Image (cartoon, rainbow, N blue to C red):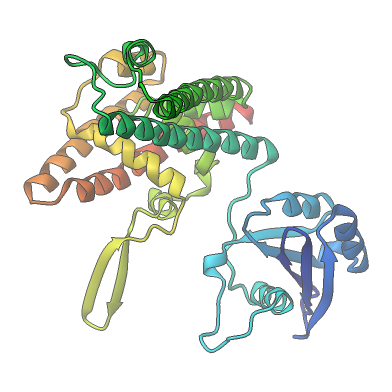
Length: 374
């Protein structure tokens, strides 16, 4: 009989509810402890030997700190996907203790799905990339507020001037004024916020450049190789790598497509097959940048300008995959639009196939550096 014991943890900001499933079928409550390293260490010491212990908790706002603490103490730990934890339809009672016991029981039966856990350095890069994404969203909101404010008060530049350029901002600061002090104060605040968000975005992009320069050689190589693809510049490439981590953990590109949530939902029963919209159950940050990159393939295949500069010095095999992607995805876009598909549906389909080419380039690059390390 297996002697492995299964520890279920229901983790919150201040507390951790613990339960353990014994090999003989018994599930015992271990109580609620503070969410502190010393308390976690005491709990693990009570459950010696750690070699026979497997722990799990649900991914959530507390992050991966507990995972790193447990693995440092020698405990095999998994962070599981909350949406894939089995639930009983008739269960109407939910408490921390019951959730911990359910996790322990489900871990013992093998019904949980573990998520990939980054190391602290990779997690730091991902947080930085997401901070840049938040700054971009805040910049867009600030511009919209100012733009709609100017529109309400009939303040428009003469001729055709592109918005948010240096010339446009100079026009705002020098030629736009309001007689009423309340409106002038509002206007100055909006302008200041737009300028502040631009500076914030610039600082974060510089920090990303520094983080890339200090990253391991393999990660830098994958980021550079992905930029051979049309629509995948530096920020998009580093976002993909930060969100996916190691591409080699996906045995085939279909698994990466499923991870992105860009695959069709399905409800098939008997002889009836029904497929619906994409599941959107994967990584939303990855799905967003892939959707943005896919729009580039509405144009005919071509290499020049910034794309040619990004491809300079890359392996010929990587450039061949990128060129094949241009032909395949542009053809796919053209055929789907000719069939009457709307552009958003078409771009999602193209983005899903783009993930296949991303997987091919990334896994090839990772394998190259793994061979060199060996």
